[in-house]
Structure formats: C-alpha cells, structure tokens
Image (cartoon, rainbow, N blue to C red; front, side, top):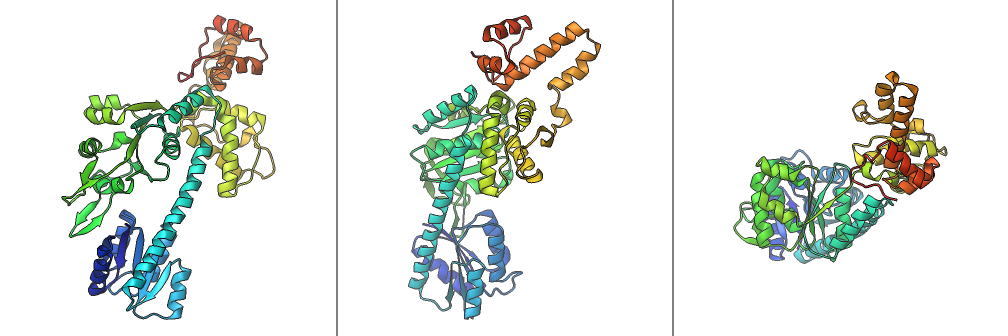
Length: 460
C-alpha cells in the first residue's frame, strides 16, 4: 500500500482521514500547516498528498503548496479538498497540477476511489519513466575497447545471479550506470532500483533515511522498504557512518530491521550493489570501515575502468553523447572533426566519462550550429591535469637536449601517446602511425616502451 500525507488545519478532519486511510492499509502522515507538510515532502516524499486549500496559521495555502511541489519536480499526485469549494478553485487547483478536487464533506468511498485511481496513474507514470531511464542506461553502455568489453562481460554474468556486487573505480567512470545495467538485465528489473548517496546524506540522518521512522503510530518508510523486491545501490559506501555500517550488516545477515523509534521487525527481499572510488582495505586498516561488512558486500568485485584506460572509446562515446543530448536536451547535432577527436583522445580526463559528457555538452551549447566541432572549441585542461601531457614533456625536457636525443624523446612520447590512445592495441596503433606491426614492435623495444595505461595491456 502507499504512503499518504494528509495536510489539513482541522484536527478532526486530519484524524478522521488518517483513520480511514489506516483502516484501508495505507501508511499515513498528518500535517496541520505548510511548514510541517513541506518538511515531510522534502525529507520523505509521500506517494500521494491530500491537501486542504485553506490552512490557518500557515505561511502558504494549499494552492501555494501545490505550486511549490510542482516547481520542485516532485511527481506526487495531489488530491485537493476544501469546505469552500467552487468551480474557480477547482479549476485553479487542476491547472496547478492537482489530480482531482473534492468538496467537503465528501463520501469516504468516493475519496478512496479517487486515491486508488491517482496512485495507479502515478504508478504507470513511474513505470514509463523507469523504462525510459532503463533505455538511457542501456544506451550508455557503449564502447569497443578491451577494458570495456571485459567490464560488460562481467556485468552480463552477474545479472543472472543474486550475489552482492562491489563496483570500484574512479569518480565519474560510470559505476552507477553499471549498477543500473545489472538491474535492468536481472530478474528484478520490474522492481525498484533505489540509489543511496552515502556521501551526501548527513550522518545523523542516515539511519532515518535508510530504516524509516515510527512515531506515535505514524510510519515513514525508509529506502530499505522502498527497495523491497529490487536493488539497493550504496553509492560511495566508504562514506557510510560506522554506526550505520553495523546495522546494515545485520540487515544483510537477517534480511530484517526495525524502523527508528519502532519495535516491529520489517522483512525485506533485496539485492545490494555497492560502489566506491576509495581503497576500502585502507579504510579497514584505519578503523573507518567494518571488515565484516566489506566481506559481505564484496562478494563479486568488479573494477569499472577509467576513461584513461579506454581512450579508443572516446570517439564512440562522443558520438553517443551528442545524439543523446540532441534527444534529451534539444541541443544541435554536430559532428566532431578529426582534429577534435584526436585532441580528445590525448587530453587528460581526471573526471572520466562524466567530464567527457560535460565537455561535449559545453561545445554543443556554446559552439556554432551546423558546423563541425574543431579542436580549438574544446575546453582546455586545468594546469594541474597537464602533468603527463606530451607538450609538458617537451617544454621541460627537450630544450636542453641534442637533436638526436630530442628525436628519441619525441618518438617515445609520440608512440606512447598513440598506444594509450588505442587502448594498448598495437595493430590499430601501427595502422594509424603508418608502420608495419613488426617494425612498431622493434621500435618499441628500442625505445623501452610499455603502455602507460595500467588498466590495459598491450595487445596485438
């Protein structure tokens, strides 16, 4: 059943509605003014709101609350009620996005019918939204590099199981995309995917957010309940407070928990996927992460590669993001010139795929329409990110070298750049630089070249 927020300044009406809804199996929260209503909406968004128009001793009336809810992109169905109903108020409420308008006194059966219809319409909208999101996630899994193919093969294997997965990789590498890919290809695809940003939730609020609360008979379900049957994704799990870690460990062992302030056990069936960009083993040694929880979460460890280790995917990803931004944001579709793509394949990308997408979006917004994107349009790397670029090596090393030594430095840096650009693939590198593969191997041996890309090996 759904979670319903009742907002009415009349205590008798609030309690009556609360009793009717509780008897029907709904979880209910009661609010008497706009302040308590908005706090509840922002902290624990309900599935539906029953909202009185006229609220005494309140900063906002019902219409203003409705406007605020809609302006904040809360996709919550709202049933407006009023004891002073007229056609103008009803029309105004519906125009602001109310699902329906009921005049007091209303028949309880009529109210329940409206609530059921509103919740069903909301459920269908969520399903459509999730389908679109799933399509978007699936489309983001693009690439042709060895490291990408290895990742996708691992993800395809774990979709068939129910084991817990630990995704590790640098920030912006696409760990949540990988988690959602597992979800949409698993038997839990039609159940919720709930993401918990451990780094952004205040430590003193973490347990309420996860476990929910139970106070004076009012139940507020947490994210554990909301993910029942589906997947719970702990994003940056290393930032979870130690106190919460011990309680999550108990949930993983027993599949039950109690809400904050409650005694009843709540049973859940869910799969847990976690991600981290930090060294959890070091966190354990420092006493900042529980070793037993690590072993419970790290059943299937999967490394998500950095963009540095899949540079040959940059043209594919660039084309994909260009098309995606055209469809979702209405930005113009522009081709990227060869010089632009070459520069992108040799630039540092400390922010990984997220930074690449942002760069594509920036040039599509700022650049001229119907013209290819040129290298000069690309955002320049920060000075701190230029440490390992070829130009930097030239500036620091070549000025004091003889011509012969400078040529050797150039050849070495040039070939290393191209090898890393093509993900360690010698065949592709040889074709691009115009050498036979065997000749390139000899040159690499002479120059003592190995790929700087530690996440991929040199392959033929």
